[in-house]
Image (cartoon, rainbow over all chains, first blue to last red; front, side, top):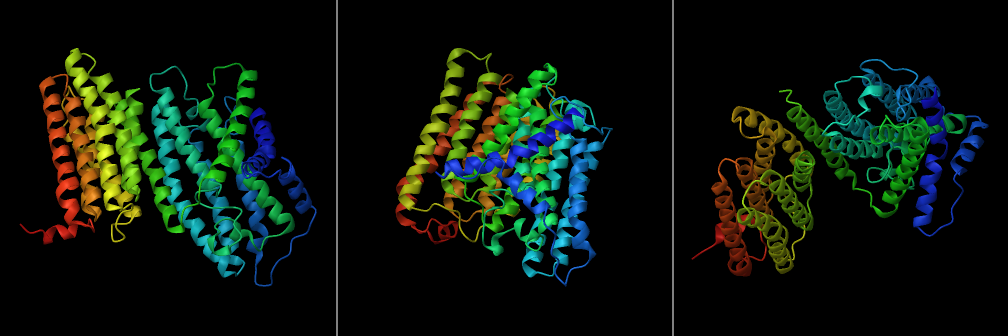
Length: 300
Length: 209
């Protein structure tokens, strides 16, 4: 239960800090840290408007997307605090509930009947297809390295072994890149762009409004917190006292959001045709890690 | 520590295959020189002082300072900063790299010797294939040059893998490394550079006596 509460608390301020850092880097004062939450609160009190061309899919999609992400939240360990649901092979369920959310947002975009949304859905499907191998190869590497198959045990990397630090750092690097792709951030996608032709995630929710849009935005807050927690779980040694882990967890989360803010402020977005190359490179990096684990563990 | 160097070296190979800017090629080559320096220090620490100094000087001075300086000079002279537009796109080169990684792994197992660490062999073969890929997939001579230098790094990796058993081989490898690189650089900086302004590999067919 502690893991769930910590994750929910983190999701409340993550996007706010990110926006604050971006404003600070561009010399603006900008809105407060809790402004994204206030926006969501306003949206939650509004009703949704649906186009006549849409069907039931676009009405149920936001709820399914939110539930899928919440399911993923229940599986994620938080720096030594056990998740509510944990079993052998749960990382496969974790990946597939994320994929279910992606699938629903894609078919909802197609259902809207807008050509822009169809274009965004096509891009989302491609990037989703390319990033999943990276996640699975990374998980496979960590499974081999730790000898465990549950998320709660896999991320308990620091046990005093020779290669803990190296594999931990490599896992953080790959997870950080996966987080950027999964959350549709720079260098893959720019959430602040105003041109539909260059949008990926934002263009898929152009026809979503009110309560439904609020659910989509809460989902993206949770997704950030999930990946932040996975990174924190790798970095923080689980054998530390609980209160130290708690403090370190929040520090890592804040640093993660600050680093994404800095990346978004000082890094240009890739051209659309370069995105695949970037994502395949992440998968290949994970593959290198996998082979090094195979060789160092003398598995082959 | 050695494992971290292997992983970084492998990632640097992926990066050099994916990037299309020659400035990055040079930066990655410098990084590889530093990584080889680290590997040599850890792997060959039992060597006598003179031998080890020569090896370390070769990696840090030659690979990280002298050769990159000459490569920069070539770029400044030719004013070509990106790979040719007709080159194989980065998507395909990165996918080919994953195939090469698997092939490297298989070859390391087929040719494995008990006294040599397999990780060295995998990374060395991977480096060799990356160099060959740069030579075959890129159109400009500069990329071919860097490809050749990457192959030399592979040779250096092979030599430090068996350095404990054959110390002389490491020095021979280094001499070959320096000889070939200086030969190529001097040719590019003094001869071909004046005649070939386009710097494309295809123009080599038009060279006359």
